Length: 249
Length: 311
Ligand SMILES: Cc1cc2nc3c(=O)[nH]c(=O)nc-3n(C[C@H](O)[C@H](O)[C@H](O)COP(=O)(O)OP(=O)(O)OC[C@H]3O[C@@H](n4cnc5c(N)ncnc54)[C@H](O)[C@@H]3O)c2cc1C
Ligand SMILES: Cc1cc2nc3c(=O)[nH]c(=O)nc-3n(C[C@H](O)[C@H](O)[C@H](O)COP(=O)(O)OP(=O)(O)OC[C@H]3O[C@@H](n4cnc5c(N)ncnc54)[C@H](O)[C@@H]3O)c2cc1C
Image (cartoon, protein in one colour):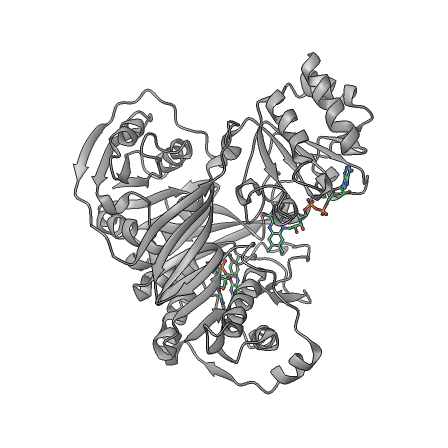
């Protein structure tokens, strides 16, 4: 079984985000970029499936500018076998990414597609669900644990009230949550080996996908700032403030 | 054209956040309908009919809807959507699961976690863990929007909308439910609690969280946690507050042994009053705290619990 994983290039989660002065977006020049952390979890899960013999080949997909090659290389260094880059400088929204993914799925016919539950830049939490819809496949969102057996996947999901178990038919789309696994670091020899692994580059047009955005971003602004508070010295002072100043207890 | 709010429920009542979603929907169009899909969902439909501002409740009975599988619910939403200008869901684990599937089937974009309705087609939503606010305009005919409940004041009760029975769409046969492991708690639900007590890695163990439970019970508070505390297994996953967990905005948020990473702040910085208890006076949590107390939580928490008791 082939497994397709989506890896998105995002601003590293440790970077302090700065909104551009002209309010068109956030500053991305000279900012550290990394693989979306949820996608590292997706790649790790696919590698574990391959190590257990449940998967035969892992394909890492990314969509975006040429630099997404680096993100795919990271996945290859972790253990993915080859990459597919849909290269475009256009703004990509989740529905467009899902359509690009679908086109690649139609070509590659994987048994499972594993994507992150959300990308930490746009925080949409949509792509996996949309892909499953376009394919007419089942979906296991917010996966905490997976068990692949006999054409079905048992998915333990992280939901509002705790955990929920579902059984879904394969082929299927999975979206990863934080507790699914702890991703490995790529070793130096594997980083070297990854340089030789193939990456196929495609254009959205060649896949017949219209990626034009459906949502127009009118402006991007700083969030309102909280006014700074005070330090209290004692518990008694804290309780007094909460009772008489804030009036919340 | 009217707005359709798709309501999650437990068979008896719709979730509390449906009243927030109705309030948000009413800002998109004054005529709000609520869809209650389920198996034996009559009581839940009645609870939806009691929300002020709801013009009509659509109740769809189908055995396939008993456990809210996205594969089965989305086709129903897709069938109804053409009669509406907007489909709205609360941005909880149900909304996040179902709405994008319906959107893709309709070939429309989704606006995720709107925090403000600027006009019927324009919304404000946080991006980058709330470190930037994007104003986005939808160009699609049907607008699918998930809304962040804490940003919309819940519509009041006391309404009496008509309930209309509609046909279900059956099972897609792709997925089945195999049981839940839900956290049991007598405490108020995290996202609607007036006070939230939250613990982080500083607590050092699940055992030590008992201390926070005692404090929470004295305050009638809900209990939350940082990702680090959940990852370490101190508390279940549904306690996680933050960018990738739950978003809360209570009157009072007490962060104990939490450093204040941006991913955590994303889930609580809209709280009215924030208290931070941390032994490191440089901890970033103090930058958003109204009242900071530097010191050892193992000493402070019992003292605080006793002081609150005294009144
Ligand atoms: C103000 C603003 C400016 C923007 N500017 C640009 C821009 O200049 N250039 C640009 O390319 N985009 C731009 N975008 C688009 C945005 O960054 C996202 O790519 C897009 O909206 C997808 O949302 P998401 O990643 O949050 O989706 P989610 O649904 O949260 O993503 C979930 C998962 O889907 C997969 N996935 C999503 N996107 C990709 C991808 N591209 N490749 C591989 N896997 C993926 C990943 O597995 C990810 O974990 C902009 C968005 C905004 C709001
Ligand atoms: C993709 C991604 C998503 C994430 N999503 C979330 C999210 O949704 N929510 C979230 O919370 N985090 C999230 N994180 C993690 C986040 O970056 C931080 O790692 C996490 O919030 C840290 O938790 P903490 O504050 O409990 O632990 P730490 O950062 O280790 O802080 C512990 C604090 O306790 C204090 N302390 C220790 N002992 C005592 C004592 N005896 N008395 C008083 N104070 C004490 C310390 O001074 C320290 O400040 C995410 C990270 C990533 C990469």
